[in-house]
Length: 293
Image 1 (tube, rainbow, N blue to C red):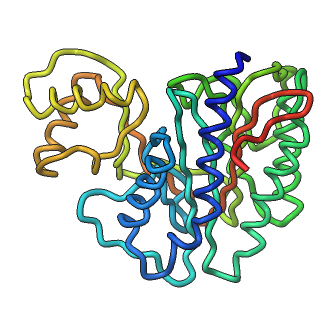
Image 2 (spheres, one colour):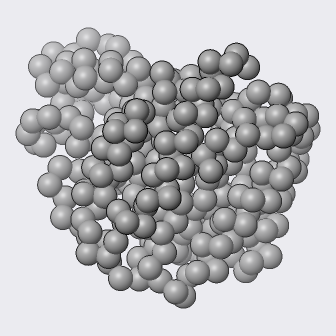
């Protein structure tokens, strides 16, 4: 890995680590989710980075892809389990990390299970390590704590301007001899639950990504295409789009119908179980560099 590339990854990771250290001052009971999201994204920019994706604030049985929208008034409540998943990029080089902020003492062990699984998974990271060994370590740690890993959510590789690339890092055991390579950048991302161990799509969608360039007639749709260019293919939030929410949703529908839009559906635990999450981004070395801690 070139020195400048590694430095960009490390800089992005340092920003995420600083924000995580302050997250309990931002995520508090009674605080609007919208204000939390805006505060985190503002902090990213103030520290010299850019959001690699809209901050995900997934509460209780929601596992991923929830971000507040325009004018939302939802508050952090007593006994909530709040997953904060944030990404920072420096010139397209992404650090991706997550932390669970828990206001419910009954689920302290659930939070610890995801954190412990992350630590055990990272212990397996080195060049030529079997990815199946990482997955097995994650699954065993969560199950030994009395919970289930979420089988259809995974960790993933990271490339410049690309949040989800090879290799996939499952959270459950599987048979494969696929191995890590030196200088790969990977996000290890365990989810633990007291539910079914599977997530499903909800109807809600607040995060999008442009995946095509078919011409569209609607002026607002064209404006969204132009706006998305500044994100260089990374995801963006509905609330990042200026103007009327009604017109925005009509424009998004046209982009979707044209095949230009990928929807990140809000993911919920299939049986309503509580979910915890932990995540670090790691550069694969003989001595792995955990850039987000």
